[in-house]
Amino acid sequence: MITIDTGGHFDASHTFLCGQCFRWDEAEDGAFVGIAGGYAARVLGQDGKILIDASGGGENFWRRYFGADCDYAKIKAEIGSEILNPCIDFGSGIRILRQDIWETLVSYIISANNNIPRIKKIIASLCENFGEKIDFGGKTYYAFPTPEAIAGLSLSDLAPLRAGFRDKYILDAAQKVAGGEISLSELEEMPSDLAAQELMRIKGIGKKVADCILLFGLGRYEIFPKDVWIYRILNEVYSVDKSDADDFVRDTFGQYGGMAQQYLYYYYRENGTKE
DNA sequence: TTCCAGGAGCATC
DNA sequence: GATGCTCATGGA
Image (cartoon, rainbow, N blue to C red):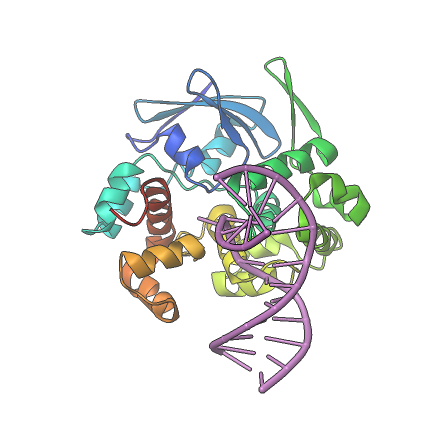
């Protein structure tokens, strides 16, 4: 059992259900069971502490995954505002996860013009069909398949996933990464704008998907991904037009824009933008 | 039946 | 660079 003390800034439901990740499910007892970095785990939030029972990974891996070095008291104070404070209260236990870059890349390709339940279903199918088995707690789980495991597949191999038009994008991503045309380790070192450009060389990755990969897979907390929900919120809550969104977000939310985005997204998806 | 979902590619202007 | 159409699939 690994314990991470967050000083009160963790809630498993908020973190796993806020829309940033797709491989965690709630168990009967309130714990969450899922897979990260090739390890299966059971995670419980208790008094702001993260209790982790995992098939592997060790403390360093899980501290990195949960962003243990992020000071959420400081972040919340810095981005707080009249509009944002209720959102921060509502999703106060959210932690932005540092997810595996490859898994994040493919997951957000799948997210395009899709809904969250179906995104989860397609990813689960991808893992069950092509990922390595993980035995944990008497059950079998599946790791996210490597680029190499996918690169050699054909479109008909991917057909059972029911991924629709995204299947060819998944293949293109795997082939570019496995073939060395895109280097994931170099992405980790690049400035965010260059990393986004590099990611957008992959079919199916545009600005929004690239931004999600930067935020959820590369820990670039200043990145504020803008999807249909966010544009709706900016318009109805902040009265900001789509054409002014980039400037407004940069000037308003600053270096922790990614956290602000997630508090807004979670709050207004759960509660609606209209009273 | 029609509309929509954590968008992006492509043609066209 | 902006606009409009299209892309699979499944649930509401």
